[in-house]
Length: 56
Image (cartoon, rainbow, N blue to C red; front, side):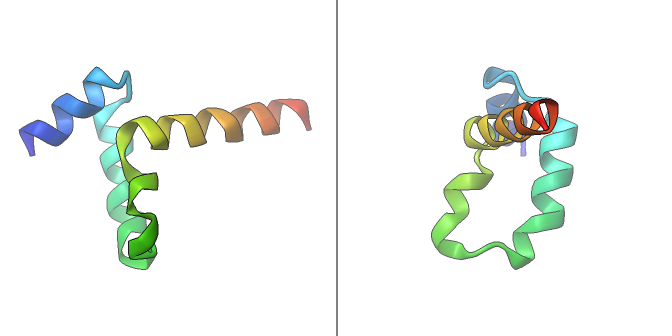
């Protein structure tokens, strides 16, 4: 658990927000796309979604 939290911090991701989102989604998330739940990929997807919302 410590490694997950520190990895999130090193990726400039809020560990609580990341873990809460990942734990809520992981049961229905396809195994082939688990890399999308890694902190650095998760952050990029969140930033992209925020940008799309800001433009719309």
